[in-house]
Length: 617
Image 1 (cartoon, rainbow, N blue to C red):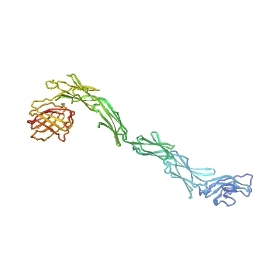
Image 2 (image 1 turned 180 degrees about the vertical axis):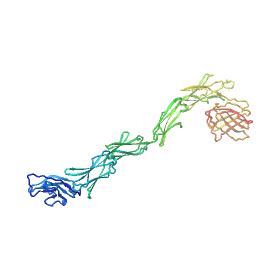
Image 3 (image 1 turned 90 degrees about the horizontal axis):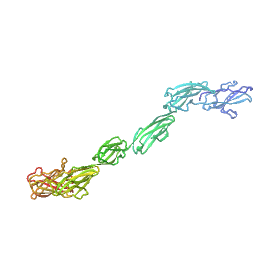
Image 4 (image 1 turned 60 degrees about the vertical axis):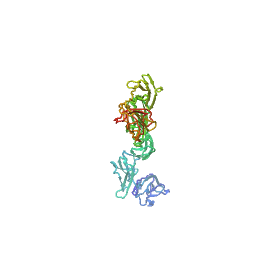
């Protein structure tokens, strides 16, 4: 150790035939054994002439006569490190420089023997060495910074080898990953001196990955960017790799690695795993990346045509995040809602004609909505409508047959008394047919030929036959007729096509009342839109029209004073016309052409107030 001393043990031999005279002398050289190269003289027995760096520092401890050349060097410094050679002078030509040398190493700090590799959780021994080659100074060794070590153990030893004495102290413990990078120190000091020597080391402890830190699971919007970070605690640094669906996306050997994802799509939603591997172990941690996006266009059934009574299963599936709410609509009306699901099944049991229409599946979540639709066409056998009937008119009998069905029903009339079938190919009887959606209307006019029955009506029975692919139905049409009673006045209402007005014509002024059959079917009578028309006229010329009321069952006019008249009645501005709910093609102020025959009494006929019958054409 610097500033201490060292003893270089030395013995020499020479041939037994040589007899030294004038004594035996010795010389110690530094660095070279050959005098002719003028190496520095360390010690010389005949004179005190030595190299400047050794003056007052060297002393021969051995007895040359006993062939012992041991040398003491005091207060040594780093410059004294090197090889030392001994030369014996036995007199005359008997001078010998021995090739053997002593290697001196001067230390300014103790040596610590550290294993090439320190592995976590494996027992470790660290040994600190201090030379003990100075007779008057014995060193002591202490370990520093050991308080954090788990159960450290210490042991000392003394070694002597190749003329060198060494004092050692061994520290034993089991390192942990937390000890990596920690400092340990060995301190050597000589009691009763000020000489102190220290050496510090940093523990390089190899350990497998003990933690892998990644982002917490997160949510991102479709089309946005996200960066996933991974940091691995290991020594040496791990090979870090990012995995997705068993595919390695990125790797690097570093303490941390970041994976950037741009323009994220739903296909990138899933589990991302970061793996750290440094040869001492493997560790991984995963996160879940959720990609939020609006619902995709739902996949639904194709449009279909089914028969009445069939049972259907309607499917709607879509994708979205969060899971969309699926809503079924039929013709814009809510049918059912299923939440937090991406598949909706709507069961339709024994579908009816009312099930015909457009079905739409609407998918919604907090990020948007989408929908898809399809049509269901329900085919069914024809159904006769209650509006079907025969009515006595001025020209004879008018028969109307109305039916609903899909496909649209075909209508035929059959006159069993005449054994005549009337259809659209028949040019007689003024056959007329009209189709509106799934509703078909047929109409014929029969002219009386004088055959009468007791009640005054025609003696002809009329059957209506309706049919399509799924069925046929035939029914005898009910005859509805008007009868005049004596003493009644007759009035007629006439409307012109395209004009918003009606003309009232009355003749005859009588007291009395009249009874007539209602125009609507029982149970289907409904109050029409009520309207009142007020008109101011010259009382000196014509009676004043006080009120007009329309009902499916009756129609009457109140006239005062009683007088034959012909007068035009304009409806009030708020009038929208008369559209009986169970009649077709009858409008008060439209281009209606279907005749309407009415006969009714006034509800409370005042004196001189006529009842009337008439028609609107």
